[in-house]
Length: 361
Image (tube, rainbow, N blue to C red):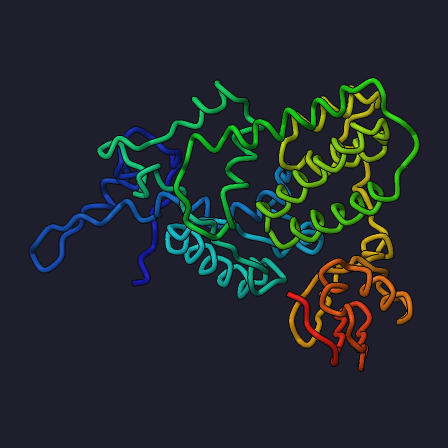
């Protein structure tokens, strides 16, 4: 080394697995110390192109160079890299090696290609083993799509558990996300939607927007879908009372769209929106509406829990005392006894100390 490669007029790939260098016979075969040798011609790993594809993706129509300086400044580095553990050597390690060389050559301004790395967990067969034909536990996603639709497959894969966790596939649980999907569609198809927004639904909507937004940022996709299911039930309850707000259903469709794009798009059109949901701004939440106006606090009598009290977070002591003493089990424990001390910690607990009199059984 260094070894100078031959000049070649034809260097496109061919049928020969040895590569294009195998055509340069005069270069490939050489004599040294009376013995003939053949040089290795397959010098490039088969995934070499994938080692820097992310750089080409930022400027794919550039016919002068692989990527421009402006594209590098505008797009690099990659914000998030998601791949399985098998990518750690087959791609991630090689791409970093290549990128380090490109950086030292001054072809990119960023030293590291990826800002954040997340390894998604493996989906196992129903028997808890790695899917393989020999075990007969392979699940064909096309079969799931054919029976339940692509959105159901997406929803179930994301709802199975944390993204990074290894999880067994359980076909019988797909029906759960199918029911959720159908509930959303049924809500969007109702003819009795109203412009009025009940306070309970409004607060639930803003809490759901916040939860789903933050969960997507954190790739907690399973809990985001769980929050959507809870909000769907809230809307169903409002519908039973004839108070189903159109704004609430539209927000549900927007939040569900990244997980079930076909469902989101169809429901958006059913609701009378002419433009694609993909161009609609992401819903924003009001932090004040995400806070509970009331809290549930425990009520103790002589240190033992005797009930729960639903009360405003900032309720005054006299109100808390009146409501606490009215609870059946608390009243029973205090009947005929002197309230020696009333301890109230707003938003946390009530503790009543009583003494004297006979304790009723």
